[in-house]
Amino acid sequence: MILLEKEERKLDSKSKGVLALVLALVILANIGIFYKMHANKDVSNADVIVVRIGHTTAENNPIHEALAQFEKELEESSNGRFDVRIYPNSSLGGDRQEVESAILGYIQGCLPPNAILSGFDTRFMVSDLPFVYQSGASAMAALNGELGDELNPILDDMGLHSMGWTESGFRYITSNDLPVTSPDDLKGLSIRTMENPIHVASFKAWGANPTPMAFSELFTALQQGAVDAQENPIIVSMSSRFFEVQNTLSLTGHFYSAGTLVFNKDFYESLKGEDKKLFDEASEHCVKNLTEMVWDQNEEFIQTARDEGMNVVEVTPEQKAVFRDAASNVYQLYIEQYGGSQELIDKAMMHNDDFE
Image (cartoon, rainbow, N blue to C red):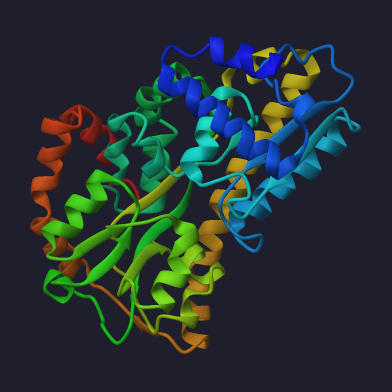
């Protein structure tokens, strides 16, 4: 209990103290190592530096594959000084719980989607705006450039350090016997979304009935008809085998799923000398490898959908423009209600014409 008390004294509100206790108990139940959970102490003199990283995707997802490469590279390059432990499949909780655990230091890192970070600071919602990016390349240029220069200090203030931005790709809609090529196709449709105000407002503007729920509940909800449809990056939809309960994939590309590899700031800043050099190199390679895997596998997963019997529906640029026009008020909503600015929007879009 002494370790928990030390962590709780760092928090500035009763609610955070309760959250810390709950998160500690959840993580202890999952990984059973109470005596090592004070990650924020100086690790420079430790014989072995343990790095626990949680993520919510399956082990056949590129996110897990990239993190597994990070594990292998860092452990080998450091001759075992680093002990990297990856926890997939939401085994440490959902994306938000993982971020909270990383902030509190109960785990060292995670790879949250931008839409989850938006729940901590609404300025991140700029990357959640519908059709704000024209391509993955333009998004990466912005997020690892001028836009990232604005967002990364927010992570620092949260107690996290970003090792670079990556992606899971554009989000597509799956449904049953319902091709989606215009907002009219979504009218009255119950669709699972992330618990993100921009996502919810966009689908409402398109006439759908957005239904936020935990990702871990989604397959069963589709199977039982609790929701009619869902939207996710193709690598998530296919690795989660949603083709078993949905037969139509519409390539809407309505939102872009950015993400960033983050580590507890105190943990990261405690790394010194060769430890920090090796850690930075492995992290850089992880982010780069994940982005490349997503780009390389996007078409492969679309073909997988066809092979599994799904009707794959192309959506033209002209049809996408209709979606964007129908949700144009969401951009103003971001500025007026969620602390955004036209400057952040401009920085997100500034590379859209640089890549074909």
